[in-house]
Amino acid sequence: MELKKIDFENFDIEELDFLDLMMIDIEGNIRHVSIAKGFINEKLFEEGIGFDASNLGFAKVTKSDMVAIPDKNMSFLEYKDEFSILHMFCDVVDPFDNSNVFAQYPRNIIKLTHKYLLENNIAENVKMLVELEFHVFDDVSYSSNFSHSYYQVMSSEGIGEYYDNQPRMRNNRGYHNIYPTEKYFTFRNQVVNVMESIGIPVKYHHHEVGTAQLEIELNFIGIDKVADYVTLSRWIIKNIAEENNLFVTFMPKPIYNMPGNGMHVHQFLEKDNKTLFVGDKEHGLSELALNYLSGILDHSLTGSLLAFTNPSTNSFKRLVPGFEAPISATFAKGSRSAAIRIPGYLKEDNVRIEFRTGDATANLYYSLSAMVLAGIDGLLNKSNPIEKGYSSIDHLEDKQFPLSLDKVLLGLKNDNEYLLRVFPKDLIELWINNKSKEASYVYNAPTPQEYELYF
Figure 1 (spheres, rainbow, N blue to C red):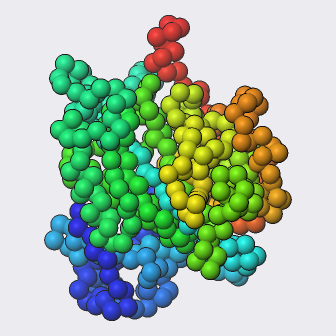
Figure 2: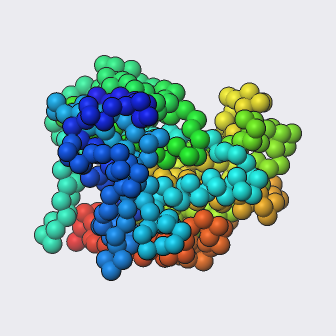
Figure 3: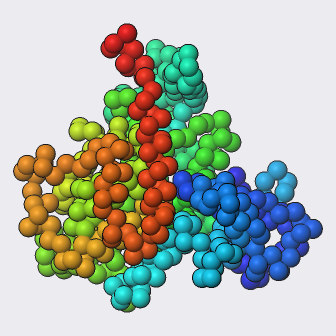
């Protein structure tokens, strides 16, 4: 995969073979439409192109015409199969709305969250560092039908019948393992090289605990670009995997009884280019930071926030005791079992928080916005995590999150006022409806494990 960062204002569009407009659907995935060379003109960059938003999961068929406007600040060049392609992320406007903004669109949600911070003088930015965990397989097959249901995965690191009697990585001993025991070092190098070529900042990459489990950790990015960059990173990872005849999944729990994939989000509020999270309170945090993290835990405890940060049935197969997957409303310094961790290796002037419960089945635009809005709600209400017992590991059962998709969706239905500062009510209702259908599809189906137990 060959990508290149460009300066759009000084770029000659005559060099292009295609203009590729990228939109984000309701699940947080990239969709695209490619414009032929003969139709590319300056007017198109200003006025955009119409499309059917109902097929992206948003608008009703009776009111589905939307307009995608290319974002000149989020564009990059790809050379693919001898073609020169300019990719541009798009904003979406609603021609039926006087405000001309399609409020449900993911990129609009995160922009409105940033706008809320600015207009209410809370902060000028939220800096976020996202850890991407995922599994890589050499072969995958799965099927679900009236007559059968199964999945099968294979990895040269030691998963699957072919590799069962070969030299292989020991289970749960993959963390920071080195080649030749780990097999995907060159693949990760290729991915990171492409990410950096278009300006996505990467700190490092390594093998994770599980067999065939990898991690790429980004550096801090402002809220205006973080969801774009993470979404784009996932697309790059999957493309390069295909070029290497590999298969990538960000599923939270693709393999039974092995470590799952989270999406840890480090974050802090910023004003005048200075963090607002450093202070003289617990673990070197400011009172504002404590209020903020308390808001995140408050709305996680109801299940509401988890409906966006953990929006799949598979999410709750990762959130089980014993796998470093936090399931209780707690915060602590240096603890990987706490839902919010304050990294223990940081200097005092660099303190931040890390929310560890979420995963990458999330729509990044919605989940990161919801996370920030939950934090702001804690800030505005001066929520005190010490008084609420979030700093204690006693009585964890009383602080346990709802641990099924049905339960967190009910939490979202009952606890969404903090989101309405940005999220349209109809988007929340649509999300609950869509995810309830997913839950019903999974929970109503018999599994191979049930055949094993009850046949």
